[in-house]
Image 1 (cartoon, rainbow, N blue to C red):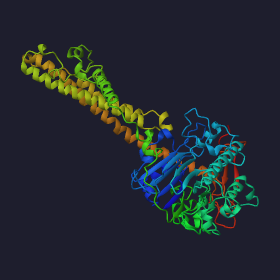
Image 2 (image 1 turned 180 degrees about the vertical axis):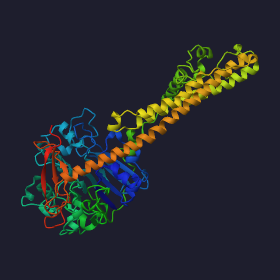
Image 3 (image 1 turned 90 degrees about the horizontal axis):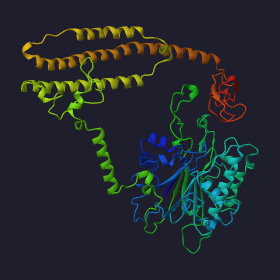
Length: 609
């Protein structure tokens, strides 16, 4: 069995990077995949994000509405199975639970009684315990032979007292849940981004006071060598391996020189699965863990990547700022027949929708049909009502874009008794068709012009300049249109009534042709003038900005190279202030190719509010 833990730093971009969720999961060839920091909100969940054939998934999303915490964390566990029903595969959970306080399942009820493993947490109220689970940081799956905790630990800044207290509470409650399961004789795996680098060997810049951190002390207290119950599986297999990191700073480009930390872990506790009489020297890691590795091939920065200070600024680095950790188990037997738990995404209404009843489906259909009769069926309107509408000077109704002639009233736009012969009735039928088509064409042209005018963005300079040449061209092109309209016609006296109808139709067609030609000339004039003006203005402005920026950017003292500008985003006296630093990636101080630590404040603040 193969288990992978991976902080994806957003599940959407990882799916986009691999083309589909299936491609992402299959790239690991793992039986259980535990993702952290999915950054998905419950109301945005769709089937293509959390479900795929051949896998059962169990997710937890942020439920809190605190500022900056929505769509922030989130975890999801994928289990590769051949069948979700009546299966004896150990990868398919027998049970699943969102959160680790045990309260998420009954949080909507009035029961205030805490689970038995919470008996020693009287200092916390039910609301406080639910608050710990409300950030979507844990999914628990029971696989029979072991219980798997997929955990995303809180990240805390040094001076953030509120989040420090939250992190203390988080790990204290988690420890109580783990101890409760161990007391029952269960084997446990805790995998995920715990945001703790336990040893100095796990941190690139560990200082003399590295071990004074309270969360590192808590982590070490959980390990067997310090009297705890858990084994750090990676260190158990690679006790002296250095530069084995799983996370790097994106902003400083620390991946280039592998200047990171190991904060993604796989912890294991419990006895082995052997049932022989002599079990001395047996433990789960020694008997069932074949290998534990960091999958560095998933790093953003590849060996062939060009550093940004050598012209690689435009190269897009895809991937998370974390590397996955992979655990390979051996001799894991099958479990009794069971089906996927109810927490599976396949049973989540927000993912697959709610099945409609037959009554609700028919009611929606009746409402839709009644709406179409009231608003969309033109044949319900009488022909007489259409004739009584006012007609403008070129023979089109003033409401032409809102109403089309009746097709069902014998194809005519006039009453039959107003025609003297059957021949003229046929002509009216044809003219009505031409009339209808011309109006449809004009409506489409006007809508198309409106869309084009909205979608084209003007530059600041062209906004203040009047396109007088364009206006004159439009006027000239439309002069023929009005002159043609003023020319008199001399119909044959023998066909007065018929020619009236033909005049009405021909005027409509001619006017529409002239109007179409007038409108079609406008885009050509706009394209020839605006595109050239935009191109010239944009090119000049960009050249000016580049010269100004190059002249004001200082050179770092270590490499004599142009620095990069940054802005202080942390709240405080310098919030919004601009500064310059060395453009090279962060690395060991002993490496002359790494960042030289040059720093300089800009002359003024970019934002000071």
